[in-house]
Each structure stands twice: as structure tokens, then as C-alpha cells.
Length: 116
Length: 112
Image (tube, rainbow over all chains, first blue to last red; front, side, top):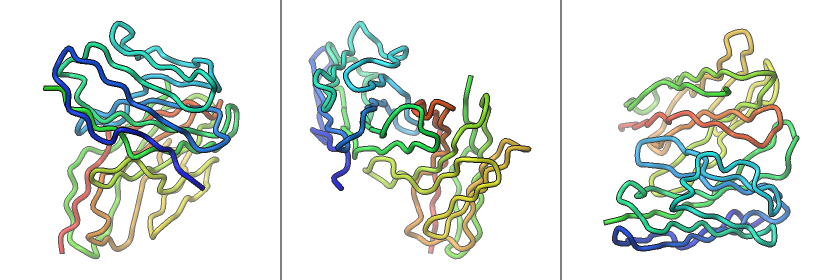
């Protein structure tokens, strides 16, 4: 079974530039998550989708971050304009469905962003 | 709200030493509990999980028991190897099954 796919793996941009990350979840997984992981910290949820609807985006800095999952499958996370503090790993994850006890979340390899 | 607290690192052990990484949680109801491992330059991988009280999750020699009375899910391994060097994250999934909360991670280094 193919895992969660993310691209690009690494990106270096200058502050105030824009960047986009792409994620394709595991086939059949209705729930998709974007996490931000700053070096030395645990993952912080940015946004959670159920199919193509947003379940939780309370910690997404909406003045500069946006995300979409138009067809309920793959997703794009965009940052515009980037700030130095956005340097982090952006982890995409997916899980099967809502309401399932013991539901497991599966992560991609991550997209490593450096803002200079 | 729901949350997870895990022991701070870094932890450095000699090969074949016993490992314990403490994790306690706060949650309403009956969450599921997880340990994830992150090797350098990689994403998080599921190590083990437990879905109800007194369940024991195990994988690759690691074990953790879901203790409702102490709200804990401590990770243990009897004999660590150099290849176990990684960052370990405790996590819980709320009742609905799709909201996950992660601890801050514990870095483990095993020296030969």
C-alpha cells in the first residue's frame, strides 16, 4: 500500500516569497492533516480536512497560510509571504475516517522549508 | 482540553540498557494512545498503539501499557540498540477518533 506522498522534500526561499507544498494521502483516507514541526518540537496541527471540508483550522495563520483539498483527495498548503519563523518541516498525514476508535494517523516524509 | 505530557530529553543510554520514556495524558472520556518514532530526516512512523484501558501495545521490542488509573502510557524497551536512536512522540486520539494531540518529543541516543 502506498504511503502518504509529499513534495517537494526540501525548499529554500527568501522571506516574503511564496511556497506551495503538495500532499497525496493514502488511498481511501477521508481525513487529511497538515502539521507544522519546528526543530525540537512536536507537530502542531495547522489544518484538518474531512473529504473536501475543513474540520479544524483554528491554528492556521490565515493571513499568510492557505490550504485546499478541492476534490477530497490531494491537498496543497501555501505560504505567502513567508517569514523567517516559518522555517520548519511541514508534515502531511491522513487517517481513515471520523469516529473510529483507535484510528491511526499516517505521516508522509515531510517537506523541509528554510526561509532565509 | 486534551493533552499529552512526556518526559523531556535528551536521553542517552548505552547499548543493551533498559529504556523508559514517561508519558501522561489528560483527556475526557476514553482516548486511544500512541507512540510514534521519528528517525533523522524522516516523518513520524507509528511504533505502537493501545485503544482501551489495560491494553498493551508492542512492536520491535518496545511496549507500552494503557493505564487509566494513572493516566499514563510509558514506553519501555528491555535492551536498546544503536538503531533505536530517534525522537519518540507520545500522542492521543480523542473520542471522535480523528483529533490527535502530540507530546513535545523525547530524543534518544544510544551509544555503543
